[in-house]
Length: 347
Image (cartoon, rainbow, N blue to C red):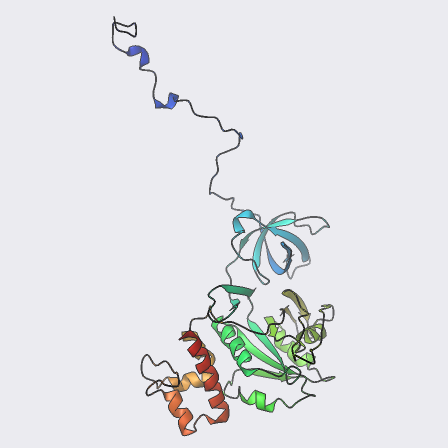
């Protein structure tokens, strides 16, 4: 007899296997975690109009008789994904729009464009400004504050890099003649320019360019951007400010990006107002795309040798040769200087 008290084989243990090992019970009595997410096939697609302290204003059932605004929060699985004004969001939950109700954003539709900026040219961390815009209206003042050609060049680079059509409006032309400033952009045949003076704001002309488009408004603080937005969208109520007489800087009045519906005589569009900025970093832009924003110079640069940097010391550079021969003219040389300053930043 063995020490187990059995003198035959171990048949009495044949019914046991590793599945009989005791497993500690789930102390929270909940289901095991899974990476599978619900499909949310009943989700509605809405347009994100703005964000305030983690709550998103979303327009659902757009362009229907049931169009209405709801408030939504971000789903946990989207906590690392930026949701910005202009996004097309998939929303579930309470979509009635009643006071006190809250929907939930569970996904973002593919974006057609994404306008971004960085803190400076060496910062690779991008700040998303707006999604799905197809136009950018750059607002500058002829004076008070003085217009900055190179800042506008940066806007144009960011717009064209994002596949967005740029427009330009010069305000306060009653204070100064913008001719010398506008000469800087003479070579851009596809840049449409509007001018505005006190009491002579071309609301209808600018508004006609907004119909059927989502247009993001950008500009230096104090240039009159919010005043223009209020004229185009009377219900906007965007705060307006003034320029400091000592520093020449405008005070930030728009503190957040928001989409506003434009109603014109010939149709509707979207005005996307953004906070004023004094700098516009391009650290996120591929340097190859910078030259593309200077369309008249890009055409000349086609004669440059392969791998040309287009910098002032670049050998056999067609751009430098054109500047030296006088082919570019004064405005063209200023544009080339602006281009080379940008390229040197990325060099």
